Amino acid sequence: MGNSSPGLTPDLTGRKALCVCGRVRPSSTTLRRFVYQGAGSRSATEVCVCGYHSLAHHDDIRRGAVSPTLRNCTMFSPRGDLGYDSYWCGCEEDQEAAASDEKAQIRRLA
Ligand SMILES: [Zn+2]
Ligand SMILES: [Zn+2]
Image 1 (cartoon, rainbow, N blue to C red):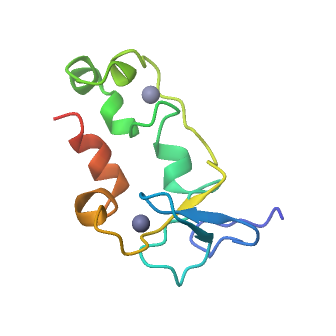
Image 2 (image 1 turned 30 degrees about the horizontal axis):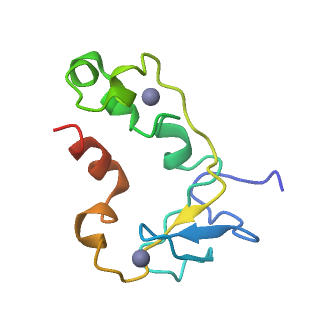
Image 3 (image 1 turned 60 degrees about the vertical axis):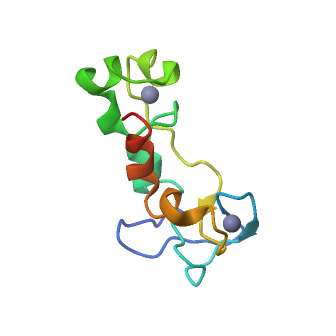
């Protein structure tokens, strides 16, 4: 605990990784496309509680958003540690979604 320098492998003990299809595995860097989403990760600091990336909160993008969730989110607020990480189990839903969570979220606005 308490020794989480950015760039170092985070402690994955006890964490779980979730695939877009809902499968859950114990977090491990050996999982395909494993992405740590705990404290200090980009996911925790750059994604809002509303589920959209901080970039999506720029007024121009936000006002034109299809999603009312984003339109109504006037202030970006980092969601922090979600309590789980993400990975890809090999399911077909992956094609675009899991390639990059962040890009997928911005793409949803288009
Ligand atoms: Zn899957
Ligand atoms: Zn938001």
